[in-house]
Length: 314
Image 1 (cartoon, rainbow, N blue to C red):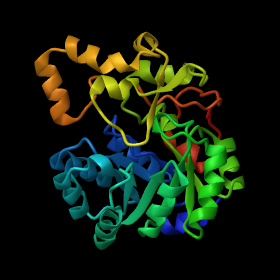
Image 2: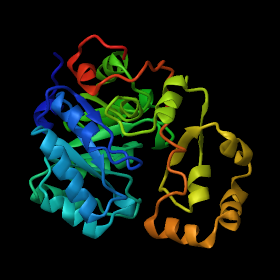
Image 3: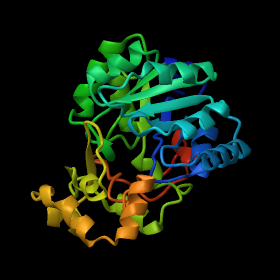
Image 4: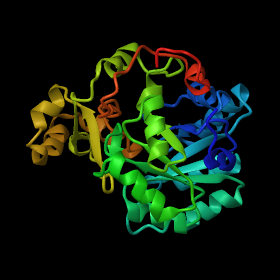
C-alpha cells in the first residue's frame, strides 16, 4: 500500500483525492471515495446553505471517514461558506482566487473551524501564496484537466510547485486517470493525485449514462481549451480557460469568441437569462470536465476497487 505524508495530514489511507466539482452534487460519490480510503470532496460553490447542510449530512450518513467541502474563492458566497464552517468538516478545499484577493482570512477561518485546508493552484505564484497563507496541502493542477484549468502542463507544473512550497505536501491533478498517473505524479515529487473526470465515470456518479459514455469514448483529442462556455454564460473565471468537448456549439464559435456571449444573450429568453445570472450558473453545465489525458478510459467501475488496488477495468 502506498502511503505518503499527505495521508497523515488529511487522515486518509491512500494518496488519492476527488475533485470538488461544482457541476454535480454527489454525496454518494464523495462518501464512496472517502470510505475507500481517499479524500472525497463535495463542490459547494453553487449550493445554498440548506443544500450544503443536507449534502454534508448525507455524506456523514454513509461514512465516518475524512472528506472536504470545496469553494471557489473568487465567487464565494459568505452565507454558504459560513454554513459549511459551522458543520466542521474534516477539510475545506479552496480554488481559484482572484489575484487581488487575500486568501489568508479564508484559510484562517477554516483552521479555526478545525478543518485542514487544501488549495488548488495552476501556477507557481498561486501555490506559493496559498502555502504562505497556511494551506496544509497544495494541489498543482495542470492544463490537461477537465473543466477550468490554467495554461501550464502537469508534467512541468508539479515539480516546480513541489520545490516552491516544500515541505507542504502537493497533490498532482490534470489528465490523471489510473495507476500510471499516480506513479508519474510520485516520480515528479508529488505526494499523491486528485482526480475529477475519472470519478465522474464511476457507478456512484449521478451523471446521465450518456455523459458517462462520452467520457469513456473520449481519447483526449476531441477536447478544446477555450473561453466559449464562460462567454456564453456571462462568467469571468480568473486566469482560466475551460476544457470542453468539440461539440457543434464549440465548433460554431471557435475563433469567433467575441460574438459568442452577445449572440447567446440575444437568443436566450430574458427570464432564463436573469435566472442564470442570478444563480451564477451557466445555461449548460456539461460543456466542461472532459480531460486531455491520452489515457483510454474503461467502463464505469466502483470507486472502492480503484482506491484499494483491487483488479478492475480501470
